[in-house]
Image (cartoon, rainbow, N blue to C red):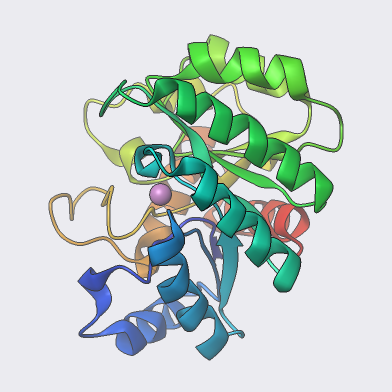
Amino acid sequence: MIDTHAHLYDKAFDDDRDEMLRRALDNGIDRIVVPPTDSESYARALNLCAKRPDMCFLAAGLHPTSVKENHEEELSFVEQQLSERKHIAVGETGIDCYWSLEYLDRQRDAFAKQLKLAERHSLPVIIHSRNAFSEIFPILDRLHNPKIKGVFHAFSGSRQDYFRIKGYETFKIGVGGPVTFKNSTLPEVLKEVPVADMLTETDAPYLTPHPFRGKRNESCRIPLIVEKIAEIKQLSFQSVAETTAETARNLFGI
Ligand code: NI
């Protein structure tokens, strides 16, 4: 299985990072996509991925909640890294209208520029969309072409949102802890989504699945997500594990 989204450079893992990776492996998760959020977390992500190239795969990007006055400088940094070494994706990028609207114009600009960067480097893009489909879709409508591909990470949209995403034909959706929450409407939506369009992810250390909600999340919890998808789609655990891993390998080239 593959964890397609985990912030394993986070200080929440400083005391037991090696053990945490060991636990992931013991639970059948052998590849993890690590998306930084800015230049500062990039350095830590790079350090981890350089140490564990067997398991941890590096992306480069500027997260929407990290977009501030210096966003152009941060984007130059991302561009520089992409030209200097191998990455498996651009991200995490996107738009967040939940935390703050203060830099919304800059968020739009940063998202559009990162889509173009991803296209130029033939990389998939990892999209964070929080209360922001009405911002994301118009930008994608303007810039999308068959070479722009990627994932809507931690997808939490409606049936309509999913079909809009499906319309681009080059995007998958990331399914994580929230699908296991008791009040989640996601299982209903996922009934309409082919498993081949889903990626499994944790967003560790955040979005911990039931019954560990409230605790630190980590990559070894991916089987809880696979199990939930299998229940929703009435398929075997094994078949969901295989299909989602194959989709991840194809999208990220890992
Ligand atoms: Ni994230």
